[in-house]
Image 1 (cartoon, rainbow, N blue to C red):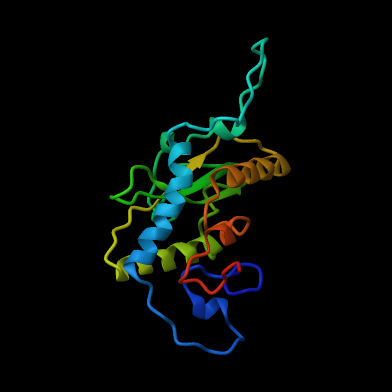
Image 2: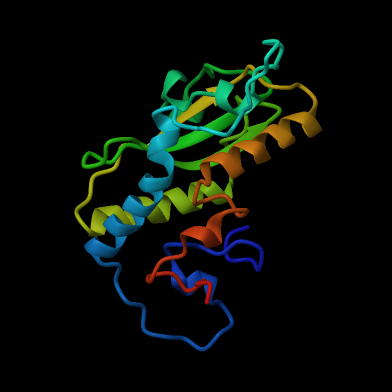
Length: 199
């Protein structure tokens, strides 16, 4: 859960440093947040353009099986508002990989913020979820800095039904895209306004 030792909050230093000596909380500056988005964009923009050289080697015999990571194209999936789970009928059922994106107006490509997996797409976004807390703090930071946000969530249901295989695919996607709100890659995107810096 948020604020635990396992996963701190990129945009809320106060929670991430619970139990430590209190410090004055410095407001996030617009330039810092834009620079953070740009760093993420530099890694992900080529992937959105399909420039993933080296991801899969060719074969002289043409019998290479399709790469499951490149088979999931985030922009080909239907964008839904983050409030989709309040709808009477969910547009997706069963096992899925889901992706949370933002589409900053000044960047060439979107930002993929989070990759997750679920055995029940119609239930996963209900209740408490670390990513929902991250997105709320991210949205508040953008709003305070006068930066617009266009968040969406997208589901891919053409995924393995077995939990272990689906989680393996989730990890491959995380290592490929390096989304900043997944705990596996969070520290890579540490910025001057976080309390969880890598030194």
